[in-house]
Length: 144
Image (cartoon, rainbow, N blue to C red):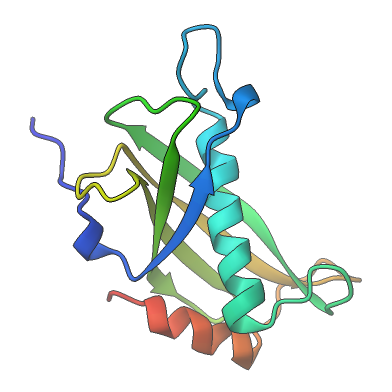
């Protein structure tokens, strides 16, 4: 079975990230769990900058409730990468992000994944509707 192609043109926003020394594992490549931190960095940077998310004092926070990643090609320190971001599903209180890790300037992804945020009230931890500023920022990335 052939892997689906994850091409740069399929993503709407890119977050540049420089791999760090401690990202490499004993095998000399970025450890699989580190990709999830790249995903988190890309999504939250975008939500803060484009959607006005206040991670310190905001009434609403996003909890990751599901995630996955497929790996196609190794990356290692030192490399500059770009995490492509798009939104696959946008619900009332949840959103599914689709992400891909690209070497700087390359067209084919080295890894691709997804994660789901459920937005909750910071105090009660109960799901709430995604605030309008965040929802608008997510709509820009929607590929439905």
